[in-house]
Every structure is written in structure tokens, then in C-alpha cells.
Length: 107
Image (cartoon, rainbow, N blue to C red; front, side):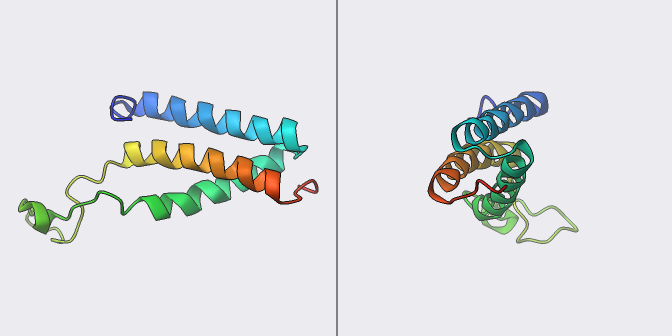
């Protein structure tokens, strides 16, 4: 994950590719419309992002490197690109499970 999250463009390409594959799977396997699969994926992705954001974060006060003028409780290194990749992977799995379990054929 760390090697994929070093570059913005690499991270963006992986996120788009995995998202497209997940939506494509639910569209073909579970007969959802592309708009419905994309909307469901979008909601799942944002919900899981807020659940994944706190993992592994250390505050500036904990690391002892408080930047002058900032909140001591602010993250020292939030690793947002890596968390975007983890969120994308988990969201793809959750999307496929949700589409398989719930009757979403009307989307």
C-alpha cells in the first residue's frame, strides 16, 4: 500500500480502477444500473472513509512535534492517500456483499 500511495496520480489511478471494477461487477452480476451501482458505491466509500480515518493517526502532541500555531491534537502524519486506498478496497468488498445480499434490482 505504501508504494502505491507515494504518488497522487498512482493513488488516483488505483482508486478509479478498483472502483470501476467493483461497480462493473455489481452491474453485471446483480443487474444493477450503472447509476445505482455508482451511487451505492459512493455512499459506502464516504461512510467507510470516516470510519478508517482515525486508524494509525498520532497527534502532534504525541509525537512531540507541535507546529507553532496549530492545534496540538492535529494529526502529525495522516497518510490520507494510503487511507484512500484502504477505503477503496474495503468499499469494493462491501459493495459486492451488499449488492448480493440486498434486493437492489430497482436501482
